[in-house]
Image 1 (tube, rainbow, N blue to C red):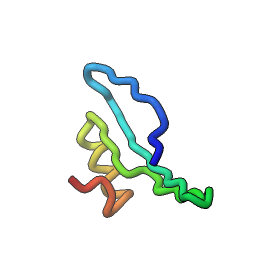
Image 2 (cartoon, rainbow, N blue to C red):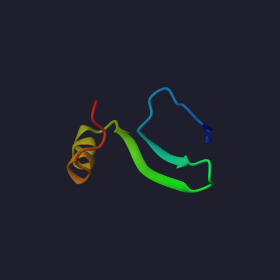
Image 3 (cartoon, one colour):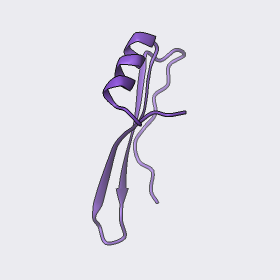
Image 4 (cartoon, rainbow, N blue to C red):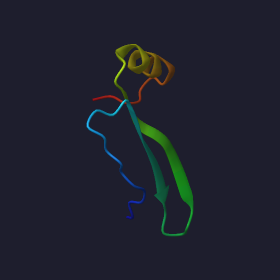
Length: 58
């Protein structure tokens, strides 16, 4: 399993997303999309959770 990408962290991030892609041994790729989302504004966090039910569960 390979983890790619970079991380740039600020003291107080305004918004963050984590997306995942699985690469199989045969070379096929499976895009899992956004697996986690964070926004400092609770109204925008709530709105994202309404639009994407079942994702971002803690």
